[in-house]
Length: 268
Image 1: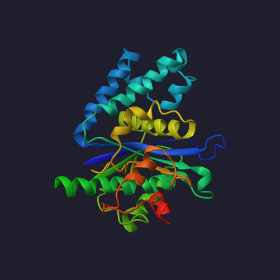
Image 2 (image 1 turned 90 degrees about the vertical axis):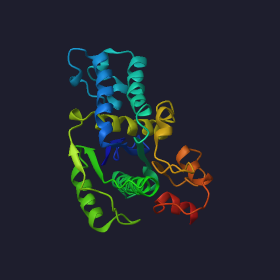
Image 3 (image 1 turned 135 degrees about the vertical axis):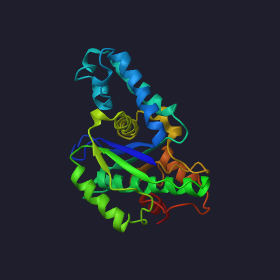
Image 4 (image 1 turned 30 degrees about the horizontal axis):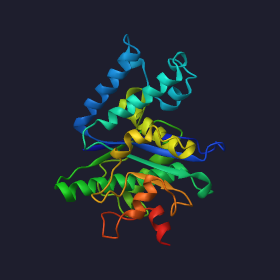
């Protein structure tokens, strides 16, 4: 089984932020222990007496306003974020990143978190389908999210997806509706938080220093088309970011799955 851990970065109501991002990691079940141990090692350096007390929350580490981060120099704090992302960069090749960055002003009146969740559900299902077609390995998927204010709406959407599918087709490889967990209890949710934050910094602040560490880990097909990284913006047809560029340079040969909203906008 593959588990997709998701968390969000950015706030839909915050008018000072242009983007909301939902991001995370797809992990084969036997890799969860290794990743958790590697993150525990980083926590052990920061707090040898009680590594479990350290929660990796990227925006809090970056700002340094809360303990234990408030006593650290900004360069040290930002290195912690990079070290956490480095665990993903060094993980088994089956571990893939996923994220969807929504430009809020491009979709007035729509819930960006729900848009991103629908995108990533579809793309996670596409990854599982590709594993079956290419490797002849049938795997089911489970989505795990941080407990948040989005819990009720996303659970409702997830139930609908199981019965009706997304707008691009039925989700055929999900084992059950998403689970919601406390991020303090899950290193993988904390890693998902860092993926979301890395993408948020790239699109909201033009800071590529975090995304560059994990860019090769986003799910892609054999032609290099990035399925795991999605940028939805009204200028996607000319956007030079990796997600949009990979769509423009990919050939027109048949591919698994269905086009995303961004893909359809380019062909309209």
